[in-house]
Amino acid sequence: MKLRLAVVGLFLTLCTVPALADSVGMKNEGLIGGSFSGGGISLTSVLTGFSLNGAQVLSGSFGSISYSTGSIFGGSFTGGSFQASVDGAGTVLFSNTFSGTITHIGEDLYKLVGTFSGVADGLHVTGYTTQFFELENEDGHLSFDEVHGRTCIHESSTAVPEPGTLTLLGTGLLSLGGLVRRKLAVN
Image (cartoon, rainbow, N blue to C red; front, side):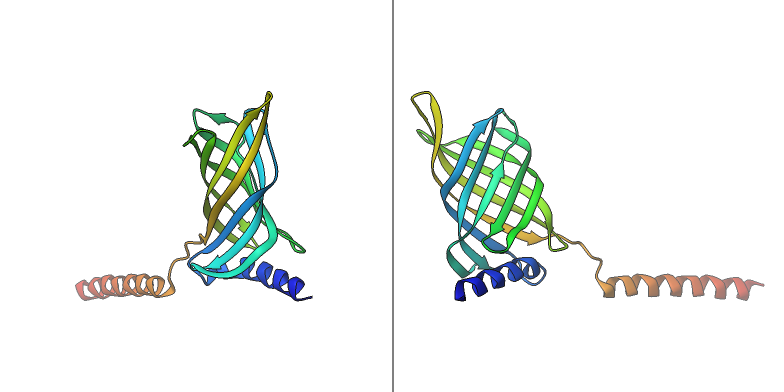
């Protein structure tokens, strides 16, 4: 019962906190599934950490992060997708605007850096992820290993501050009043 309450609390927090927090962070490690087909990579990893403004809120296995690169050309990809799911709550973030780069950094080690934007519970969010994985060729079959990474999400609305709007309106009305006064003084 406590785990269920924690999962529901995490889901509600992920949906509402981007408006209140500077950043929401997620950590993943371990491989649930992976494939390399059509010139792109698809991986699913275990969601193991959740933080708000850098402070750890939840840890343990409580969901998954999935991403697909679409086709990879010269170390870059566009047209992929990114998704975060929480056990018991389902998908809490989905984006089909995932793009970035993949860099070969070691013997079989690769680094993926991608950006995404999407909607989480009505809030427009942007984020980035840095993922590491091993891609090995064993007996002619590609396999993934050692998947881990971090993801950061920010709310991305750009509302005009109310005091600035009122200042512009007041300045405009004063200018208009000055023009009318000048026009009446001349006549």
